[in-house]
Length: 201
Figure 1 (cartoon, one colour):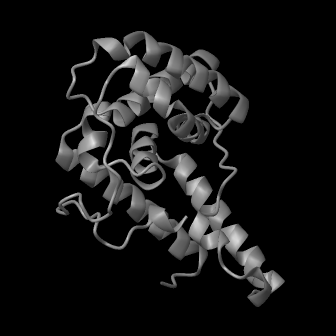
Figure 2: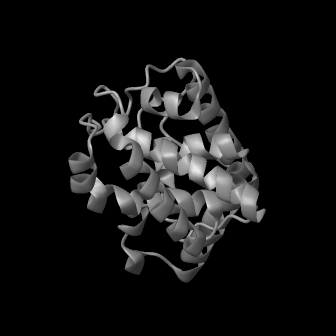
């Protein structure tokens, strides 16, 4: 959850390089996609689950995403960054499925980030644990109320580590719009959590 709030570096005038990210694979051919499948498929499934709110539907969408990706990858320009492109395909599949099935529900199973799970649970009281779970649930509800495009951009940045300049083309936005939308999404989450905590910081 912590990644969704950032450290202030994601303000609209940030340069987009505040978080160190692994470079995206640039080779665009079927062999490269096959070699990356084991790494990227679980990430795509998680992204689709977070957008669609249904793990079973996300599995179908993941399969459809890679069917389309394998069909089209050999025709991509060599300069195309493969990982953001696959996420772009996944997002369009999710939009199609939402329209077809009329789903608006959102569920996040992995509500706590890995660094939050690393906290020594023996040093925490049951009350602390309950409060943390309630806070995560509050943030999840706030995520679910974000417009789909803004939520997708936030998930791509914070959960999947894409850079702003990778998110921009797959969303069809300018770089500045990506920064603004992610900043605004984080502000909504911060305000929601502060309200839950009674205005505390």
